[in-house]
Image 1 (cartoon, rainbow, N blue to C red):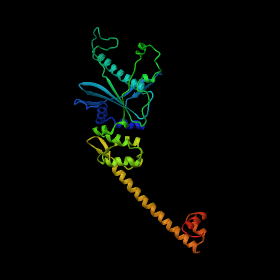
Image 2 (image 1 turned 180 degrees about the vertical axis):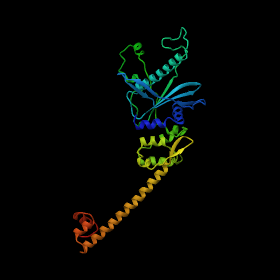
Image 3 (image 1 turned 60 degrees about the vertical axis):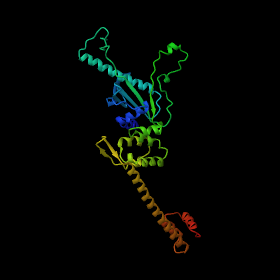
Length: 328
């Protein structure tokens, strides 16, 4: 888990941003009973040598909609991962395993009774049910995803096998949203600041392009949340902008905010002052060179001394005299 993944995890945990991606994927608004509360996505496991290790989901939430409870898993990808369907299946298996263990422990602690249709051996009753895990992968990369999207896509060719035998092979599918390819009209319909973050990621081909986008959407970028800045910084070279940002706490949304437009204006002012200073120095240097050339031409100063004062070699000073129209 590197810097980009950490920035995306922190950014995409806010409910309104989750709602935006779900409504885009579903092509409809979520119902009024929609709610989602983040829960622990830390999944301990043991490797083949018995050592304790773990998997951790980017986001795992307890959700409710359409009168149904379910678990919502969201994973962020910046690069194409050729083993992603297997990784997703592994995380789901660990999540379901944790659910089963919780049910079994609950049955044991409550002293639950078991009937003939219950599984006494594994402390699991017929009426016990698992919360389904709904998975959605957000792909933030520039390149088209050409990796496998299913578990079968990772397997060797099975066409020589009989059809009935091929049907016995389990599969696992990946539901993916290519975030940078979401059309502009769909971005405008989003009810969260995700539309601005994705909008600027479409403008990363040039500095001038994304600066213009920031100024055109000044109302948002004058109070942009820090988590959004982190995501933009991951995919866009804004190091000089970031160094000038100052953050203030917003009590309403529980995030730090900053004014990116002011940072851009400060940079432009600094560059203008720097340009004026450099121009003044160049003008002074040209004036000094012109004076030295005239003194040498009039025989009032030796060429060696004039070259030293100009911090040039004798040959270079001679070239400057010729440029000024003097014979050297």
